[in-house]
Length: 105
Image (cartoon, rainbow, N blue to C red; front, side):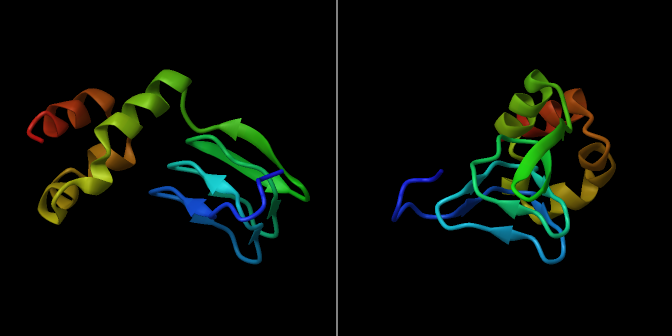
């Protein structure tokens, strides 16, 4: 359980399904998907999919190394022009193409 008084933190590129509840003090990592109606009462690591009551990790969206690379690339911090120009690479999680763009920053 999260520590009392701890802030609730929602990472970048997170999808939260309808009716899901995120309890106070929980941290959702980057790229997390929360299933509809889930009750999240514990921290969720980057790029995991959670569902249920209480929410549990159903699976990981990417390997741990790819998830770490996506967090390092941090495409959500890019100028909007670069995000739009690289939408296909972002949607397809093309790590090598994204690293090339991220090298500019």
